[in-house]
Image (cartoon, rainbow, N blue to C red; front, side, top):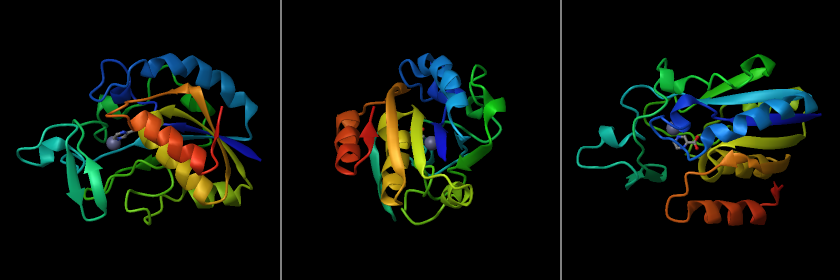
Length: 197
Ligand code: VGL
Ligand code: ZN
């Protein structure tokens, strides 16, 4: 069984959004077209409470894209984005949400960020996606969405670590690319055995 994992195709990551990824919306038609090729389709949704600890606005004197040390390690500070119930947190209207079997929300704990669809940034708090996939008999994952160098890469790395066979379809992803983060993420994925298609 194989699953398409569609990462964070939300308004705030698309042009005009609070943390817009260049050409973030250019991948949506292609993602919709791929959905019918899989046994299962999972969407992830970045879903932060107001005042989330990953927001620069929660740290006086800090600006977006600066780093901070969190108890679980270094963390990039972001503009406020994907606030629960806001328009920015909604899926892009062009995304075929009706085709999803499962929607998994992440990043809802105030004190910890969650890039990966599997674990929060402490690398231990699970989202439940692993159990969902295993109980459905899924072994092979194809990942697409936003952003290549953050949520897609962290999800792919965790999936590989958990023993899934993972492919990232790069033409159906777009990157933020902060200070070489895209090249770094691609290196890490390659080393981890993620197939970069
Ligand atoms: C993401 C930064 C903050 C992503 C989510 O979806 O890649 N990046 N939250
Ligand atoms: Zn986020």
